Image (tube, rainbow, N blue to C red; front, side):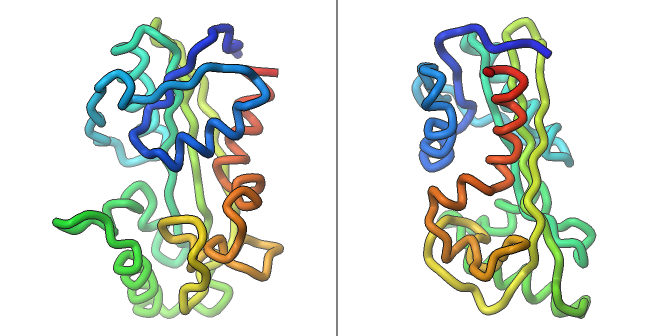
Length: 202
């Protein structure tokens, strides 16, 4: 397991919310964080069919372009009765010509779930895979998951994406009803980050 020894880490994303979450998780380590936008890097095409495959594409592209270690994540919602869909296509389900429409995506998820007709609880997981890549091609991989269920109708206006229809195991509220920073402590990304920090930073 390779330790992170540098002073600067590139977060391979253009997503400001994701950058803020990661900055919060890494704040005790005094690392200077930059992101793709700081270097004018484009978003590479995510051509893989797994979270780890797409995270690898993003992390290695940023590390190679900047000459610095880079961290990428790929994450999404996997609904058991839909054979793991939307999975790596979680964001794609929300794409429209005028931007992402997550109410539309949540409605699609529910309609497809009802077409299958599984009994409650309609189990699902939010999954995240982190890849920390170095310019020499070395990488470390950390998967994270939080199990839960799909609920309907959507509840709450916190968070983003499919949060209003996901209720984590052991909680009576959806991610959409949960304080953002509280959610960040228990989320799939937090699970992956705990492993990353234990192995590469502590």
